[in-house]
Image (cartoon, rainbow, N blue to C red):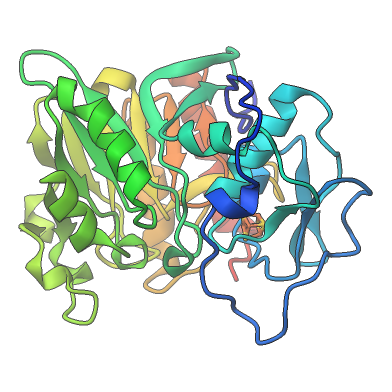
Length: 344
Ligand code: SF4
């Protein structure tokens, strides 16, 4: 069975008089000196992507029924016409790290889109959500739109774990705390690698979380030398708590880590593997800062990791129907990466 990615769950309610999308989504600094304009590749209609898009993929994996790639940036190819489709389109706008998704008219459901985060995530093989896994949205331009996740650890010692950082936004912090406090609070902020740590100190302080990172990913410039738990190669696999293990997956960077959460059969992969819409398959990170061969070995290691749901930092999430499916898909990805893969 093929892996599958995309499409978030939707819950719609309308509040007449809510502010426009521009009012609820803070617009981060632009990457170009000229004012962004509507890209001509957008389908006619109210929703559009402007020229400030950095092609981070977030909107394309979150709302693939609306956004696609066109000439190196994203564009709307299918204007949303139903309330459900409008909500997922505006959720993509909230998640967009550069505020590049716009509407020509104020949207009455913009506030619903903003307050829907943390967002429950679908298992696209079964058309259901995966219980206890949430996407934080509000991607940061400083992580090139990297995804941040929450997972609920249940049982005798419950808590919530955050994996990588969204951009800091006070209402999101309040929503995360409201969700996590009855469940033991956010105990850990696990940082996959140095690319996805933006805002870590602020988030850790706000949430009262202990930061966990590989020591080789720490540096003074990003302030990660202050992280509370710094792991070395010899520590892996590292048991964070019962049923939660950190796995060393070097390749994209030398100290990249993934997190296995056994309760939800989830692997939070950071930047080492993702579902590529372009290739229509599982694939390793496009950018390699450390070692291609080590990245292939790190992906190969996943054959023996018991997970069915993959939550990456970039690109689409992915799901396996069972262990046999996982082994087949991972083995195929490894073969592709060895034989014909061309990372950027
Ligand atoms: S989320 Fe924003 S920056 Fe990323 S691809 Fe979509 S429009 Fe571009």
